[in-house]
Amino acid sequence: MRKNIVAGNWKMNTTLQEGIALAEEVNEALAGRKANCDVVICVPFTHLASIAAKINQEKLGLGAENCADHEKGAYTGEVSAPMVASTGATYVILGHSERRQYYGETAETLRAKVALALENKLTPIFCIGEVLEERENNKHFDVVKAQIEEGLFNLSAEDFGKIILAYEPVWAIGTGKTATADQAEEIHAFIRKTVAEKYGQEVADNTSILYGGSCKPSNAKELFAKPDVDGGLIGGAALKCADFMGIVDAF
Ligand code: PGA
Image 1 (spheres, rainbow, N blue to C red):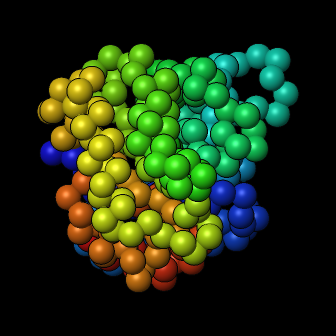
Image 2: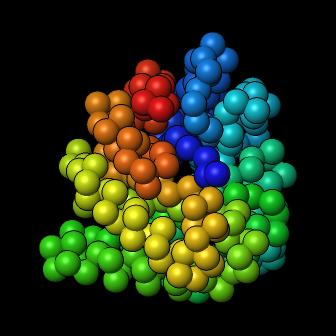
């Protein structure tokens, strides 16, 4: 059956020294706990190798927040999937709404990134979600379905089985405005049905679908209690160990 997962997305926060200290704090907090979910932190590229050397990845997974859509070559400033893998990281967030919005990521670039991530044995945490206007016009189901179809449905069932999905309504990210647990469940169930129609019920039942968008200790329990919400992708609240652990403890 599918895993419950709490993954932190640090975004462009923390210097290397601050990041190492935070990762060590989270690592320490997990060492003294029996978490009822997998726990992952996705951190800036610059921090990966140093943090990999400091944490116990059996209890705390490590990932990048992006990778390039090419394997290597003349792409100044980019960081490839093999480079990420060579640091010891095993996850990568792909298609975050901030990357789609500010860096022009398209379904085509995302398909290339997903393929390279999988080739390099990185587990993609693939983000989907609608903007406020789309929700207000009741387009969120269509938008999310198209993002999944265009970004992922070229994969074999075996490869799709390696993907973690993260539903993040853009209007809830960093705004303090969370989707209600019922809103989250409604669309998570729809996402699972969409996956089932393509790959069958077993693959759909084994797919972890995380919720992201102002998830915090005070609302995590209610969200995670829903049958199709398998955990969270956590931005702001992942930057404080106590808050992050409060969310982990919601399981
Ligand atoms: P937030 O971010 O928890 O700060 O809303 C979530 C995300 O963007 O992954």
